[in-house]
Length: 185
Image 1 (cartoon, rainbow, N blue to C red):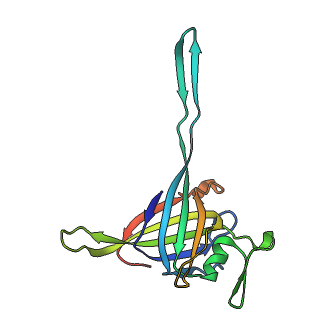
Image 2: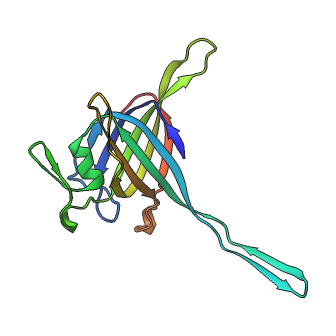
Image 3: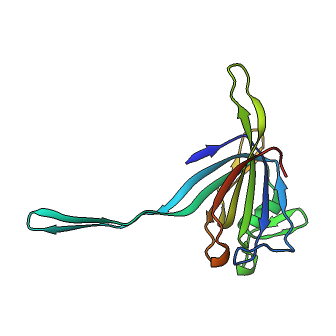
């Protein structure tokens, strides 16, 4: 798993069940992100070996299929609005309540991440814009391990899957895109 650090902001926006934009959704932003792990997810192609006599007559191998990426987000603080969008549940005042039924499970969501880009230097690197990562159609968000360290810090961890959304063949969107941008939008 690749670990991405130097993240300055994330934005989470709920989508409709089919992955299309929800016009009424309010994006939730956070600058409390510490790091993000990215692990590509593939379905391995099947391999069949045809034998005859005492020799291999043919080998047939399907191509592997890229499905998307599995992500791990580590946040420096508890943020209930982010927790509801990724893992579900409700907020009552300042209290987060875990999902109690299917109605409180999260919808698919879009995750945008801005990571700093540094210019190479022999003495000191300088910031040169951002790498914007965008993960469409994120699902199966789960709470990860909770780690309360010695000084009473309470870190949040989430695991989730970003997949290629094939529900609308006229508008198939990739699971992960990234591009250099000058500033955070």
